Image (cartoon, rainbow, N blue to C red):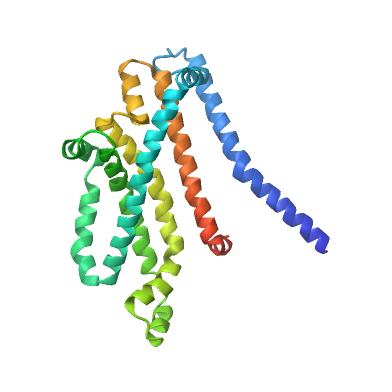
Length: 266
């Protein structure tokens, strides 16, 4: 019976591994095939919609340049994301620590988040100048709100019995947050972190669109002006790959720090 259970467990892990790796690859290949087939059937001109081989050739033609611009986008995204994480978590702690502060400040934050970020980007260039500063700020601005909201939801979801236990042990407010609220909130916080990392990439590209001098967003704008659509698609493919890698990097950190969370949810 134990051998049967072992075989069943191994089979389950094998199926899970195929689902985690094989299905995304199959879906990507199917999308590329459909894209290629549509270009051939409808005889779309390359400057309108290039074929996958055109995109590959564009990457091969300027791979050093594209990798350099990828690094510029990645660096700005990383700095902006880290800034958003610090600001979002600190703000969440401050808002959940005082009901009065939350009522006074949270509506202002919601109103600020409702402003279209593409409208703010030119102002960032005006205020901060060209270079990496507007990109970093836009990455932080777009990704900070979901991180803050997820952290607030987690910090306020701790069971009342747990908080009462901390009070019965004469724990201070800081000790209550550190020992009870924060560990309980970590799974919810990581939801915001995973959402925030993808939005940080979007924010960086918005900053590059508005006035960047480097980065993949700048490549897309420049290639659009020269009708080099294949190069623009190569830059977009690199942006997609970057977003996926950064997302699963955060997932890996979550699994490393919270292995028990996946067991509970699974």
